[in-house]
Length: 295
Ligand SMILES: CCCCC/C=C\C/C=C\CCC/C=C/C(=O)SCCNC(=O)CCNC(=O)[C@H](O)C(C)(C)COP(=O)(O)OP(=O)(O)OC[C@H]1O[C@@H](n2cnc3c(N)ncnc32)[C@H](O)[C@@H]1OP(=O)(O)O
Image (cartoon, rainbow, N blue to C red; front, side, top):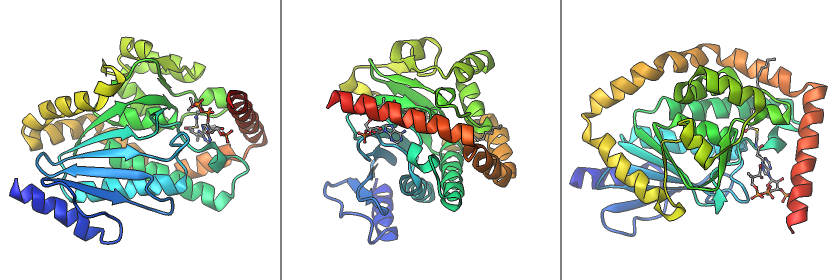
């Protein structure tokens, strides 16, 4: 226990300007910040070595370059600090994560677009390849990149009445091979093909039926259920658990590692196509109209 407490302090020392002082004994709260203030809150429980990462980028936790960078840095720190488990969740009501920030892809600055894509690759490599036991506590809608984050985790617990899926085709874009492989690892080839070609957004219940999520619990029980499930992962001898996960995922991780720059080029070339820009513009317009109708 003492060692873990020290470890918690060390997280703070490693991030002197980025964290708040621990306020509760045996629970260390480390706030990671980037250019966007407080968009990620990471609590490391020094007793269990489990981190809870709450995404907090209103209105919809969309993943822009800065936010992805914050997530990537936080994942690196947690891994370096040898945290044992990670619960990924959202602090934004009713939204887990709305996926990539479409404004990063629409009428983009081509240099930034490539840095943006590399930062998404970084997050995927760190989260999908993490040594930590990872659980997604999906307490809101989770389209596209949000679904990617959830499927990177070892286990998914979701609240009712939300939606999750890789809906890229509905925007006129394509989920790249590593999104596909991640999804395939969870729901299998046939269902992934069905899901990707039609850009299906599954209701919580449908997601449970196809095993895209492992468990459904009421909204206020999502995080407690994740904490409970985490205990099961942490009971397994660490090296055996980590190596088993690595055996399942290494090939998929290596595929992207070896092709990173080709993948950046493919993304850039695809995103700047006139037809793709037109589709993204129309989709943004649709989102805006829908949002205005609510107001
Ligand atoms: C040929 C070879 C191929 C090679 C392939 C290579 C590369 C592949 C190429 C591209 C791959 C790209 C992969 C993309 C992944 C993605 O993640 S794309 C993002 C997809 N996300 C969505 O479709 C979600 C859209 N949003 C919603 O459905 C809803 O907003 C909601 C999340 C369900 C929440 O609904 P609600 O609570 O009702 O909130 P509003 O709809 O009113 O939204 C509030 C404001 O937020 C804005 N917004 C929503 N989502 C996004 C987003 N993803 N990005 C940016 N902005 C978003 C929305 O417009 C509202 O803004 P205003 O209030 O109007 O300002």
